[in-house]
Amino acid sequence: MGNAWPETVVLWGAGATKSAGLLTNSDIARALTHILEQPYPDFRLDYSRLFPGISVSDRLKEGFNKLLSQLCSDDKLYRAYDLEALRYIAKSSPKSLDLVTGLKANLKLQELFTLIDQLIDNNLGIETLNDKGEEFFIEQPRISAAKNCLKLLTEELQRVAVQGDTQARISKAQFYHDFADTLSELMIREACEYEKMGFKEDTRDFYLFSYAIVSFNWDPLIIWALFNAHKNRNDNPPYIRNLPLRLFMDLGTTIATRKIDKNNNIILYSANETQAIKINDSDYPSRIMRMGKLLYPHGIFGSRQCPQCGKLVISFGHVWDRHSALVFGPSLIKELQQGWHYNEGEENDPGVIKCPFCDQKTHPYDMPLELQTVIKKRPIAPLEEIKKEMGLLIKHAKHIIFAGYSMPMDDISEKVFIASSLSGKKIEEKKCTIIEYDPHYYTELDWLEGADILAYLRTRTDCKTVRAVNNILSIFDLSQTRLTLKGIPEIFNCYGNMEQAVIEIFYGGNFPPVRTGGQFSCAQNS
Image (cartoon, rainbow, N blue to C red; front, side, top):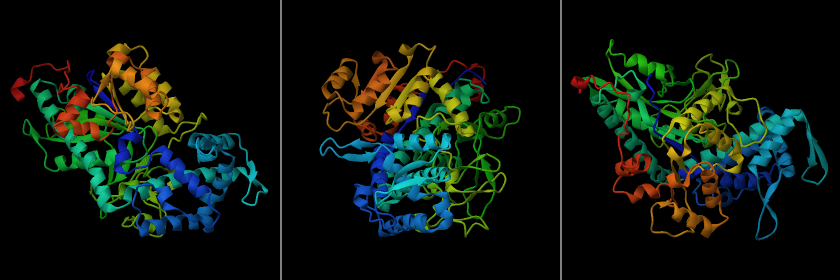
């Protein structure tokens, strides 16, 4: 296959999508605290506290209120998503301290997830206090349902946040679609350059993108942006040697979905390198394929692990629309996801995605999400496969970009994993770019290096961004690291245009990256 690996690996975190209106972990913790502290079952929600700075329509408010009401009153939902048990467990979970008032503030998600996993692993219930201050025991079978409810509320909070005001959502998302379009155009240009260099199309040196993205978020924003950008070009492809060139993403494991067409039940499978090798075989010329790595080691909203066959499935809805909110999958509540098109026979079963492999129904509680917990759980098979490939990408990368991903304490296992993936390599040869946002530190410099990074760390001492930079510098060499505090998208706006920005930030101005696997024997094909 050749020895090429993506030269640039982007570690994509919540800071990368904050400007799109998506919630960070601290936002989710604050929202969950507000919900779970409400009187049960008469919730009186303050939406300005749930979604600060986000305009939430009356329809979405009605839908979210209806969701909470049904979780309290619908027997079927109550057994699957135990909101009452979650509230009482949260009473026993640690909270952060408000340094101004001295009062307990928001839930600590890592502690809450860990407490729930600890109870599940040890087959235990928990004694807590009910709303009247009376001792109340939650039996073990309800603990798993409480965990399902926690996952569901996290997904639904993001679903509401991303829908919000339609025009604002479209405006906020524009950067990400411009970003995806630019990456797609550069991968086409890269293909032309590598073909001129004589790289054989069925080797990694040719077909593998020079960048990879590892998303530690659960949201589907970046995957949907790239899918749409690729489709736009694949529908009217450029040509190399009179053969159409098409772009695809390799998701690190086999994932099935139905074709995005409401009148079609054709099963589609995620692309992989075996397909690229076969399609690009020069003995059977018909078309040319290139592909990039896009990994979700923590799972993704809208995906399910089938309880019957164990396969990973995903659904992005039935329309190709860059601004579609259907990519979060179907909601249990129609008002929270209007326009979802169900397969025949599913109309009366909200939230269901049928497994394309075996036709079994999957539900929101089948979402394979890796949660912030310190409990060593039995690994989720498809996510474990993705994580192993992530380690190889990091090991072989020449340049690693931390795009709004700070390796927080609730991801301590990822920090250790990243460090171990780099063991045996000369870390001083790895370039590191850190994209963070600190509104309280003024500098005219777009990038800080060396002494300027140290000056920043001394000046700001203990703040979230400083802790993020220190986390990363505990692994990477300062002399090979650059830092921006402008965040995303602002650092990209510091350049003349998006293409120049991507080339400078991803490749240090040198595009395409130099690969040495070419045979230089097919120049006549250019």
